[in-house]
Length: 173
Picture (cartoon, rainbow, N blue to C red):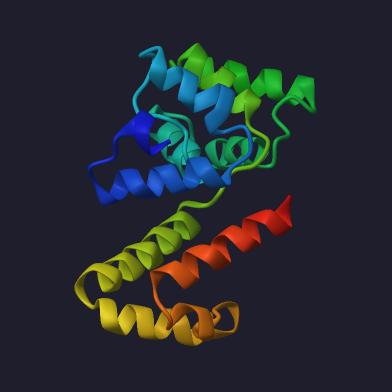
């Protein structure tokens, strides 16, 4: 995802988090639309909030925009064909492009933007400490994950660690 989208802003990282936590939001959907130039990361449906906000900007009244978002985020766009046909007609009345409607129809689950923002904020904080305060970061990391490390092996040099890695690899096969 990062290679395909080349994010440069915090907002884009949040959008990618939404894409990666949804079902049928990225693969076979937004990824293809971005690759073929139909849309950009900025204009893709990444989080459930994107749908309601976009539809309201297109002139769809807030209540139907919310209901469409709820239908899509739960993966129910094509479940009730009659109701979905009404939603599609309303979206078309407001010049919502066909690619956008088809994208909505593929989605099975969507992440809320607030959760995506929380995940990215936390990852950003962790990354900052790892880069700027490595001693504090690794102290916390090894304290939390201490039972997963064998200090007997780690304290006796590179060769002992490499031998242990080989042993682990052999035991997996």
